[in-house]
Length: 244
Ligand code: PGA
Image 1 (tube, protein in one colour):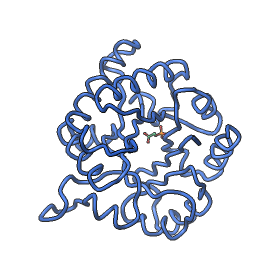
Image 2 (cartoon, helix red, strand yellow):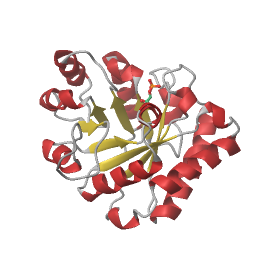
Image 3 (cartoon, protein in one colour):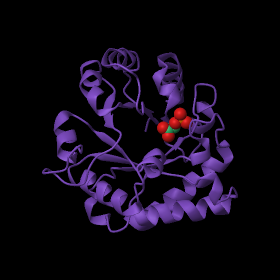
Image 4 (cartoon, rainbow, N blue to C red):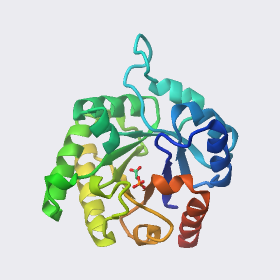
């Protein structure tokens, strides 16, 4: 199975035209492009092979929820993947585990593939045990009671992103990432009764991506800052192709 590359544009780029031109250049089969909501259309128009992703979703299907977007609205638009529980949303929007759990259930319920983000912040300790303890809680809370909404083929992916590695240029070591990926797979399988894919995210670029893509238990990468640089993404996509 080819490894997956998720391009998380975050609140970038500035214009629809720029989003379209980046998308056109990074239109590869194993790439998921997750632009801000207003640019989903232009990314869809400019891609044939890449999959469309969203950076968030609400848990209700319709109604008086100003500013929110429902899972079925995304699904009907052609979105295949949705990122849920990114640490930036946990921090800036105070998104808690209960909210994340509701969003995961709703998104899986309409057939979206969920990319659940987990990862320890620096202040919770930096040892491997600290990281495991923190991520275990996030998985238990986020995945609580969702076994029944995960249909046949597992549509849940976990992105392991240590918060201290996001946007800092301080990427996690591949050895530690591999250990965490195994830990997450074991834990998620216990909770869901199914295997999950695990991605690594946190200051991934074309120079360090191979360290993670080479990992036996790491099924891909989630790229933030570098995803806005087509040349970087093209190089990462080639690495994935070379791995076969
Ligand atoms: P980064 O972001 O690649 O800029 O560190 C990763 C992410 O979106 O979580």
